Image 1 (spheres, rainbow, N blue to C red):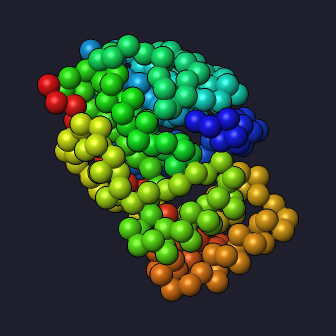
Image 2 (image 1 turned 30 degrees about the vertical axis):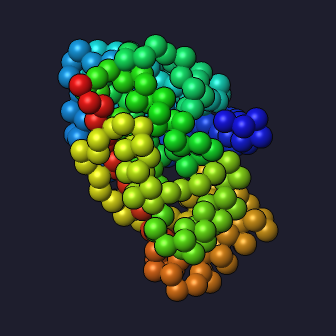
Image 3 (image 1 turned 135 degrees about the horizontal axis):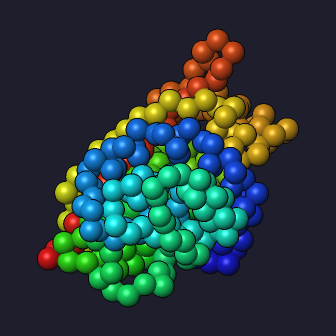
Length: 258
């Protein structure tokens, strides 16, 4: 990643690492169980969890696979994930500080790679997918979960602007069609792809990144006054005292040819 992006990611997630341990979206989101079911890890697998965040995906796979490595760019995030995972019985995970676009691992080392709700922070997702394909064994699987946008350019620009106002380390959320193209370009065949809609509480979503004051007001206005296309994508609505909206996740599974 470019140095300025690395700095933003470390700054944002270093100061909010504990919030990602307790985040229900990251700890218990439907996409986590879905990813586990789709990859269906065997007991002798080696698994790499990229941009592990609070370590929830690494922990889930460690309960079924032989060896799991949790990797993250941000040291405080890794420390928080380690503290969280070491409190759980029967789970063993190794930890590695690593850039998602350049892994310190030999080719063909892992049976599966996971990356959940993180890739929109990567400036070069094609490098991430290529590196994943490199360190996967023949027949290995890459399981990607990330927030995605519409393939319509105007909607994509609006949603990405909205996301970046909340989190300056946000780089770009792509469409599911984009992700399928990235996988094919790296030599991975897409064996499964689907979209998951999730309702998000605006205040919880904003506070997880420490948004407050005028920035919080601007973010709320941007959502409530969204033009028709982005409004249809985000579906903001007031539910009692709560402002809620919809984010869309993609689950994409890629297979490395044997």
